[in-house]
Structures are given as C-alpha cells and as structure tokens.
Image (cartoon, rainbow, N blue to C red; front, side):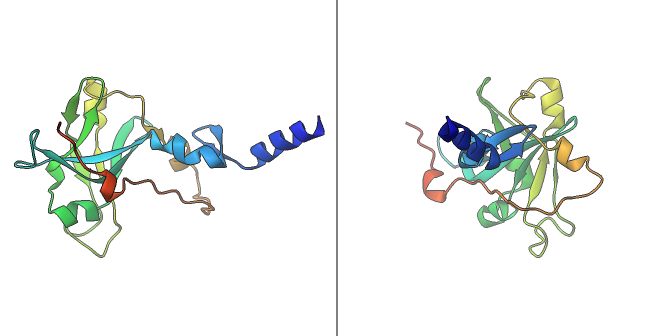
Length: 168
C-alpha cells in the first residue's frame, strides 16, 4: 500500500494548476492542445476553398472577452493582412472573422516589438457565431494584484510540415 501512496503523491507533486484544476505534468501538452488551432487565413487563389494555414492560434477568454492569440511573424512572413484571419466554428463548419486585431505598439508591421497579435472574437461569441466553450480562461491570472514570476512557459504550435491542407 505504501507504493500506491507514493505513486499518487508523486503525481500530485508534479501536477500543474491550470484553469482551477490540476493536470499531471506529462499531460499538460494534451490538455492545452484543446485550445489551439491552425491559423486560418482567407486567401484568394490558395486552393479549392480560398484559405490557407499559417502558424497557429491559441484561444483565450478573459472575463467576458474572447481572443485568438497568434504570433505576429506568421502574418509578416506570408504577407497576410489582419482582416484575413479566421477561426473555424467546427460545429457549424464556418470560418468566423474577428471584430478587430490588437497588435504591439508601432505600425502594424513593427518588427522590433512583441511578437504577438490578439484577434478579438467577443462579438462573434456573444452573437452565437462561435461557441463560448473551448477558450482557455486567463481571468484568474489577469485579475491578480501582482504578476507572479514564471516558473514554466508553454508554447504550442503547428509544425510547418503538418500545416498542409488536403482538399481531397
């Protein structure tokens, strides 16, 4: 019986608190993948359905606001514009565009700033065009009176060789 307690103890000691639950360290990647999807861009001439994939997007919710976070370089490298980005509503099989893009200070192609863009999907979620489930809740982390020092950083993306659309 001591071995069982030790196994449970080890699992508990290596768990990471994520969205008010504890996830075993070895399962954290699988847990976070559910909030990640390919970066989809409406793109005339890109194939049968006129959209292409570039990089990835991480879906987050802060209180009653919904955002897709992407890297800024995935837009710059392919020369995409902010209004080409979309999120897939898998249930309705539709691409949904954001209300606006929030990018680092400077021009929209300012390369020396932070490498991220927030796409605001609050309106589409509130109107029912996108579901309110499936967004990683950062409300508790943002609502703190101080920002704790990070002891773990997680990055999830889709490797280029897997980021291919098969239209067949």
